Length: 126
Image (cartoon, rainbow, N blue to C red; front, side, top):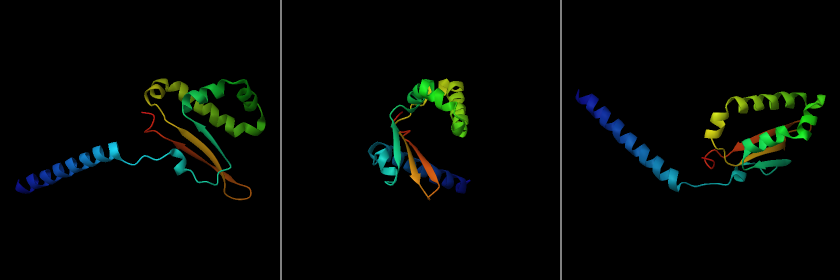
């Protein structure tokens, strides 16, 4: 019984220290601009301060509808349609979770390949 009481005391103390650290670091912790996480060798960057609204505007535009009809963009079209269905099916969650700034950047990794980096500031939007 005495060992159990000691263990519970240590766990309680650990929980108090963790909570105090969370409060202290959460309020006075270092904040960084979202660009500081993106390597500087990008080819291009797309930035949005309201990514869900901007995506809806883009996906409803005539230009996007035209591009979706081109066979070359077939894989992008599938991903875009999937994203549209997710946003429409989860309208309540999308309204609840307010995303902050978002960056999409493209980086050349070899002579024939590139990678995309997606950064979303979820703390800034809440």
